[in-house]
Amino acid sequence: MTGTQRISPPLAFRRIALALLTLSGLALLASSLPYFLD
Image (cartoon, rainbow, N blue to C red):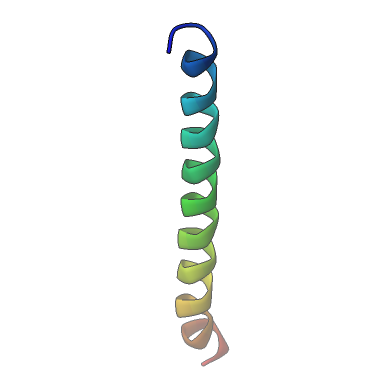
């Protein structure tokens, strides 16, 4: 719980943040597509 534990949480948080950003971006694109198609 000292050296190696400090390295992995930021990486996991970065992966989760990237996943959330990409999912939110795709959701925004999908929700805005009908407005562009009209």
